[in-house]
Image (cartoon, rainbow, N blue to C red; front, side, top):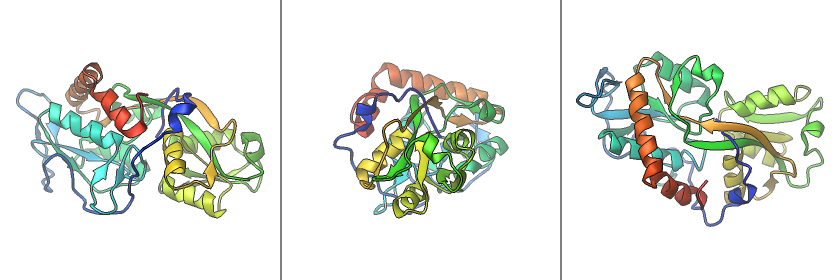
Amino acid sequence: MNQANFTRRDFFQMCGLSAVGLGLGSVLAGCGGSGSDSSSSSGSSGSGYTLVKKGSLTMISNFYFPPFVSMDDKTGDFEGFDVDVYKEICSRLKLKARILPSVQFDTIVPTIKQGGKADVSIGAITITDDRKKEIDFSTPYLDSNQSIVVKKGATATTSDQLNAKGMQIAVQSGTTGESWAKENLPKATTVPLDDIIQALTGVQSGLYNACVADLPVTSYEIKQAYSDLEIPEGGEIATGEQYGIVVSKKNPNLTKAINKALKAMKKDGTMKKLEIKWFGQEV
């Protein structure tokens, strides 16, 4: 997961964002559509792409990455910026939204590559050369950076201080945050975890010295639920990443259709409205 050029730090000191729940709930949600028929079928008339379930755009993600993707702990509904983007794409392609239960982040690319389970994945997934060898990405729809998160009052806060024997750096497995930590903090121990919530909670409890993860996510979570954590001075890492929607290489016409929808959403102001809804202002 990752992004590019989120250097607008004041943007991420977001005001008035609605809290996003993280509880597990129903395994199917969206703008219509359910069912378990996994047979491949043609897409909408004349589309030229295939779908796991006829008439539906089936999506998988790791739903522990607010404000992009998460689950409401009361209703079990999936929500977030990326969920809204996905539902809007469904509407424009005249397809029903079909969201599968949360999966581990590092299983997403292999699952889409293999096919048969899901058509797409969206959830702050960074476009990288290695991933592009396995699957296709849509055009970028959002930029970001990485960040270092520590407990307030911590003595080790810089990359130089954290790059030492005995330091424990929490990351989400399979993310570019993990890649950055391994490359730039080689003397420390990088600890891959299932999701960002485990990583932040581990730093909060003192189990880990720091966490490396996407800046918009850590900024959001610190504001919403982890007030005793902080991104220290110099903790914003300018990695220049971009997010894209993951699609199988065997389904190029679906990628084209999604790109067309994304372009239209930017042109008509829909993307701007969603950014304001979830981030407080246009990114």
